[in-house]
Structure formats: structure tokens, C-alpha cells
Amino acid sequence: MSADVEIVLIAIVVAAACAIPGVFLILRRMAMMSDAISHTVLLGIVGVYLLIGDLDSPLLLVGAAAVGVLTVTLVEIVTRTKLVNEDAAIGIIFPGLFALAIVLLSVYARDVHLDEHVVFQGDLVFAPFDRLVIGGIDLGPRTLVTMVVILMLNLALISLLYKELKLATFDAGLAAALGFSPELVHYLLMTMVSITAVGAFDAVGSILVIALMVVPPASAYLVTDRLSWMLALSVGIGATGALGGFWLSRWLDTTIGGSMVAMIGVIFAVCFLFAPDRGVVAIARRRLRQRWDFAQTMLAIHLLHHEGTPEADIESRVDHLWEDLRWEPDFAEQVVRYAERRGVVRRSAGLLSLTSEGRGIAQEALVRS
Image (tube, rainbow, N blue to C red):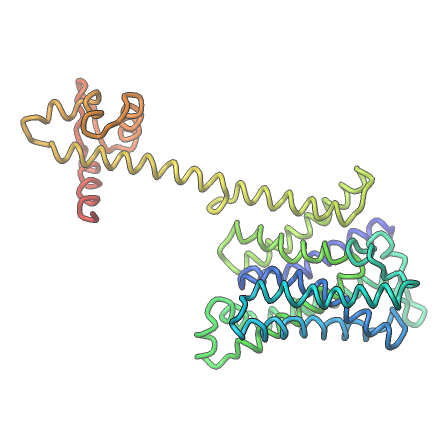
């Protein structure tokens, strides 16, 4: 298997593993927690390395995950004081822990490859050369094997606790009333986020970890309301962005991580603009349609109000609408044509009359008002 193929596989697996817990972070409005955890896990990595002096030890994963959970716990403690809100608590806790990690890294670990460049941008291009060999058998890149295991753990946790996660996410009060522990589910989720961030940290760096946890789920949220579809779309968007970013980096001869972030951002922009219900274009079209529907209803009420009266022949003329409704001639003509297409009014010899459907629309509007 070539190095390029292994890089792509690592990127896709990392994207899928990050997207799964990211969905619940987005739904819980805790996207910034991924930022905090992806930075503060560095303190766990540096702390364990300084204790044992081995960057390949699995204890680094344990230490980093523990610091991730510590970050969540400290944020919860500060938030519960009600002196500051959650986003401010995150802004207080994670810079302090991250700064401590950077200081320790700069002072005591200058000679290892875990430097500031790796922290922010990752080392994905070199990941295929760090092999996991057990009993003389090459199992592949260490990062790929690690992230496959983490992806399987994430899938297993989602499968086993799908109902609990869904209920605790959308209605924590009901979950507690039914005997579930929302806090336990919350900390299990944060542990999953921490472990995933740690596993992806060395390969893709903190910036891409944040992007992969937040942007694909945010994009999927714009497209669907179903949790199962959101999970699947998040994984698909993350994998597509990772693959597209790799080829973009080859084309532009630039960093792989930065290109992946750019591609994921492009996908989000497309969803943001063109999502069927929540996209900017769909919202603009819906507002425009509502404007015309409102004008059509006003026209129907006007005609119903004067229907059967002596002045009906005057009030039902298109060129007379400006007097009562204060409509410019061009706008009045457009509203009438819109109402005709919708079967609300009929025009005959320059006079307007309501159809049975138009009469019903006017009466329903008057009842609601």
C-alpha cells in the first residue's frame, strides 16, 4: 500500500471518528468544548511524557483523555457557580491548561518532535512512516490502527447508548425522570470526545481536530432533522472533505491539514447556502413567497370586503388598488398575476372576482385576526 493511500485512509478514518461525537456536541450546543478539549489534551500528553519519557507509550492516551475529562469537569464546576456562563468558563479554563502545556513543552521537551507545529497542524504526511509492528508483523501506520480502534469504540458506544444519548441530548429532564443519568451520559460523551481528540491529535493537529468535530456535523444539521441521518451525513461530509483536501494539497503543493480544513469549509458553505430548508437560498425564497402570500391574502380580503356592494365594480379594478391598499401599479399587477396563478382570483373585463378558494383564504385570515 502506497504512502499516499495510507495518508488518505488515515484522514478518512480520523474524519469519521471525529464526526460521530461531534454530532452530539453540535446538538448540545457545546461546539466550543471540542476546541477546549483538543487543546488541553496536550497537557496530558506532555505530563505523561515528562514522567515516563516515552512518546510511544499508550499511557499518553490515558493521560490526555484524563485531562480532557478534567477540562469538562472544571468547566462544569465554574459554570455551576452561575457567576459566568458556559462559554466564558470554557474561555477561562482551556487557555490556562493549554498555556501550561506549551510552557512545559517549550522548557522540558524541546528535543522531541512534539513541537508547536505538530500541535497546530499535525504530522499527517509522516504518519505512514511510523509503523506498528507486533511479532514481526507490520500492521500498518500506528495512527491508522489507533484511529480505527477509536472509530470502532465510538460506533460501539453510539450503538449501545443510542437511545440514552438521544434522550439526554434532547430532553435531559425526561431522561432523569425515566431513570437515566444525564450526567453519566454527558461524561461518557466527553470521554469519547477526549479519546478521539487525543488519537487524532498527533496526525492532524488541534486545528483539524476542531474542524472535523464541528464543521461536518454543523453542515449535516443544516440538511436533516433526523439524528441517524445526521450521523451518517457527518461521517460522509468529513470523509469527503478529507479526500478532497488531500487532492487539493497535491494540486496546490501545500499542507494537507490546511487543505482539508479548506475543503470542509467549502462543503459547509454549500450547505449553508443551498440546504433544502435551512439554507440561505431556501430561507430567502420562503420569505419572498411569504411576502407574495401575504399580499395575495390582502387582495382577497379587500375583494371579499367589497363583494356584493354598490362600489364593487370600482373597488375590484386593478388600477384602483392603490387607493385602498396603497400599492404601486406595477406591484398590484404582479400580485394579481400571482393570485391568478394560484387560483385565488379571476379577471374579466378588467374586474377582479374571488374564486371559492380565494374566498376561503380571505375568510380564514379574518377569523385568525
